[in-house]
Image (cartoon, rainbow, N blue to C red; front, side, top):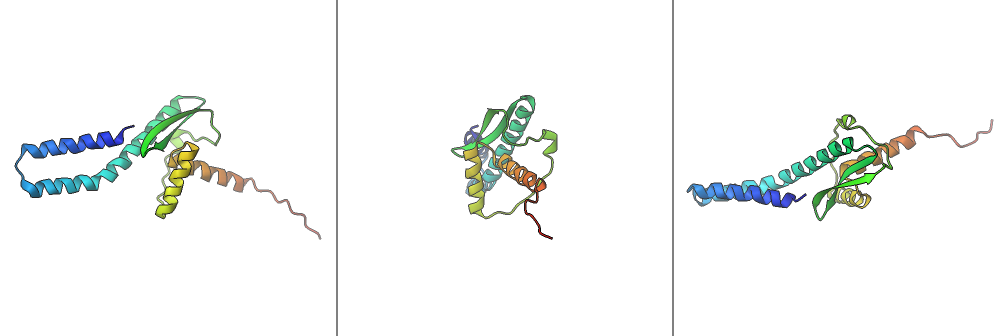
Length: 146
């Protein structure tokens, strides 16, 4: 996906609307500041749309997993045959958690997810489900003398 191109076209549309009126430098400065402030939120929205598209496509492709990975900072859909990890139906992905992470950990998660070919969301869900599966299947292997 070319999110930068989409965001650039939004900025160009804003600039063309500003050119129609004579609002002066103050209005133009405010518009530039607004666009600068909104760009990260619009990028997140684009990534969320890509993840939703991956879930929708994945739900329709039996035997395949679809995930979003970052390539050069842009979301890309990756389709793989089969699934290594436990999969969850799209309907089961309704729970939300908000985490506050150090920037370095967030960067590590994004890097690890990219190397695994997963979106950060898919990577974290797989890691958590794997960990919870190990926890629930623990067995006592020690022997006790009486």
